[in-house]
Length: 332
Length: 281
Ligand SMILES: Nc1ncnc2c1ncn2[C@@H]1O[C@H](COP(=O)(O)OP(=O)(O)O)[C@@H](O)[C@H]1O
Ligand SMILES: [Mg+2]
Image (tube, rainbow over all chains, first blue to last red; front, side, top):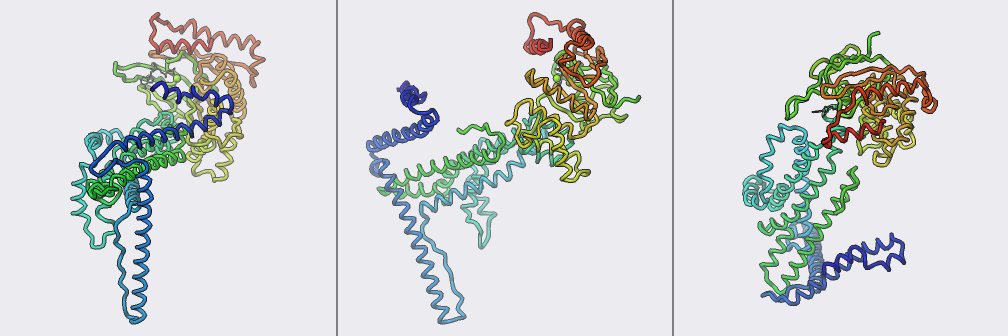
């Protein structure tokens, strides 16, 4: 079996392929066909083993059940949107009618309070992970640069980073929840408390990898480049802007990609744990629901979580390719 | 005549984990305006250290460097450096690399249009005007070194310091770069200190060749005046008895007087020195 796989990947089996076609096309086909083959084999294995697993909530969901739920979840979302539209339309009509009768009437507007659909939850999770990530970057990159530039600052802060780095952000969750409840009091909050809690959790887990990578990138600045800067007598700020920052862009991006990946995983867990809106809550609610379709809906969520994680990583990679001068960055 | 640059009785001691290491002892050298000086010596003797002291990147343990009678205490653009490893910023184009220097050095006394003209003039001087807007990873090693030289020249330095500027280039490119440098010298008549381990290069380019003794505690061994008329032609010189005399003087110094005594069981560091010297012979 292992032999067969390696024969496939080394291309020993497509000799006929290469003799007939120019290498560029054959390489393209291989890049297309091999992943498709992988997905196909996985789907077959999944389908086969799913049919063998019985749970108290029925059979383990196979590809078919998931496909069905994708359609269902989308339709539910559409239906909810229509309901919402209808609700606002009715409200507007009602208000218009009353104003027509009594011009002094001040119309009341209520917001629609339907249950959040799967698509809504995806939106919430994405919003949370991105805003938490951006907040972390705003804190971590300047801090990392400062630590990288100053040996004394590094010595002072390093123990703190080393202690907090291995702490799972989920351990912070209760503390964050309590602190946010205590401090974030406002009669008309701009953001929901749950959103703030999730956001801080994401920020906490993005912070350390970004600070570490940035500071290491800055500290290992090529000494030739610092010498150029010294010979030119660049002022500190120009030195940071023109030399330090661009030079550490590859390291900064490594930290950002790393932390975005962790953040996405942690956020889903945090949402499950804290019952905060998002994909994690969707999974947990379905699990609590325990209907016959629950497992297939959870399986759908799992795949969507994976796909989004993959897309987030690819987007970071594209951003890195676009912004970084170091084009040798690995694609993996 | 008062020298432009006075390297006065320099000692350089590096503190190392195994105790102090005296790299330079009593290095003394006076350089006139417009002179082209080569520093030659075996690898590891302390040539780069001398250059770094003049650049202000190192502070000497004893003695000091005077430029126009003012002590050198820190690096500055009036002592521009061309580093051995081009040291261009890889995220900037050739033009932008030179621009960084020009913006800094002429911040106040050149208008944007004048700056642009000055950057282009210097890139043209090193024959890089056709690839101004390429990044370092898109051009060859020789071209990178040209841009490095253009960047240094654009600072309009009083002394141009070059640390084995052509050391990493193949022989043909190196010859080409040497010709370019002579051409530029003819036009600008800069004061130059160039480190080299190439005997031909030293004789071809220099007014004086400063030969350094082996370290530790390296110092100036001999100084050779090269009185060959300029412009110099490498082909014509090959058969010139005067040229060959200078050449053999330097070779004698390096391989007889300052021969590296190499024990049989050399460390990797020492064997690197050996290959380095072979290429010059
Ligand atoms: N920063 C430093 N710390 C300790 N030793 C150094 C340092 N820089 C150079 N040296 C030592 O000084 C000697 C001369 O080095 P260098 O000037 O680079 O030689 P060269 O340029 O002639 O090859 C070498 O033995 C080197 O190991
Ligand atoms: Mg050196």
